[in-house]
Image (cartoon, rainbow, N blue to C red; front, side, top):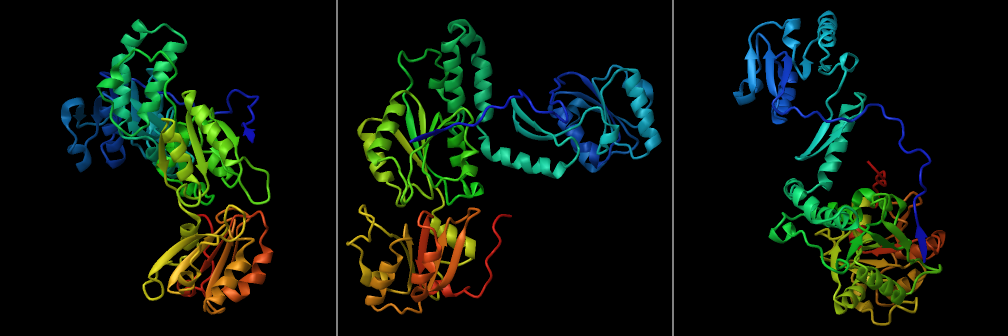
Amino acid sequence: MQTVSSQPSNKRIAELAVLPVFFDLRGKRVVVIGGGEPAAWKIELLAAAGAQVDIYAEDVCEELSALAPTSITVHPCPWTPSDLEGAALAIADIEDDAEAHAFIAAAKAVAVPYNVIDRPEFCQFQFGAIVNRSPVVVGISTAGAAPILGQAVRRRIETLLPQTLTQWAQLAAKLRARVMDQLAAGPKRRAFWERLADRAFESRAPGASDEIIDLPAGPAPGRVTLVGAGPGDAELLTIKAVRALQSADVILFDDLVSSEVLELARREAKRMLVGKRAQRESCAQDEINAMMLSLARQGKHVVRLKSGDPMIFGRAGEEIEMLERHGIAVSVVPGISAGLALASRLGVSLTHRDHAQSVRFVTGHSRKGVLPDTLNWAALADTATTSVYYMSRRTLPGIVAELSARGMSLETPAIIAGSLGRPDEQIWRGTIGEAVSAVEAFPLSAPTIFAVGDALKVREAMPLAATGS
């Protein structure tokens, strides 16, 4: 077993291109010059923040005309410097440099922060991309360098924050005074807020029981989440998997889990390597079970992070049975199994209707490290079924021998894939007859799968797709 921790930085905070701040604009006057489409979105944003918006424009666009006039006043005339007096902010949609300079001079004269839309060189502050779970509001800035990149970051964050986060933040505001009154500052108060924060990411709305201030006498009950890490590419994780990693106290991860996946975990989470890979020292399953049970009994959220999908050759059944027997809550987050990742990597349908009517995922070794003696080789020799043999690096020659003995042609299409989706990925295509010698080029320690069946020949002449996007 190995505990892995990130190295602390000597610098408390890296250099910032801009300082992120949030203006409270409720009931405050904001001046906007211009009534075109670029200004319309900013005006809608300002109104949503509770500002009283004064617009100075001789003409306004349709989008602006459609906005509710409750907190918006349109002055159909050119702006003057005196219009900026008493404003909390001043925003302008101006293309002419001379007018922009005049606007800035007027704003500076009355000490009003200013912004000229889409012209960073004329801005004292900038609008960023927003993730709105108000009262939780996330602002994203690229300091004007790459607004499209900022939007991409916003989309990523949107997937991580459940819509119900708004209701949890509202509940926190409602309970704040009661918590301050009933719980002494220190561990108890912190424990309450940490419990509420954990529940906020369970993708459910708060209920009556969540308003109870009293904390249980003993440690909160722990839980275990079995999470599928996929074949290695962090972008293939499900949203639910990322949320589990972000809420974990302890992560027990297999040796096959990539560092890119672990980077998505909560920084404070303790990370413990528990194996397992061929021909390497690893934890016994009993040790892993004991660790999960002990940590959960301490009230921790334990994430058992497994390569691929935890329910396919991942011993998840044994772990679930053990945890439930001891009264520990356990849930499962599926991942992309290596066989499915291989199909998408090569653009091959494992169940192409002209060639394969079924697909099988088959273990390539037993507890003893050899081929299981319970496999139905007669059925596996059917080329109208695509078979994917997991953990088959050492047993591949035996698989080919068994299939050939049951009548499968040595010309049957086959694929060998090792370290799928990782920088050291290896993929070979050919026939099962050629596979016996081809597999020697794959390291014994590499996670290797062996796919066989007529469906694999459909795109055999196509080049490999580039990894990544």
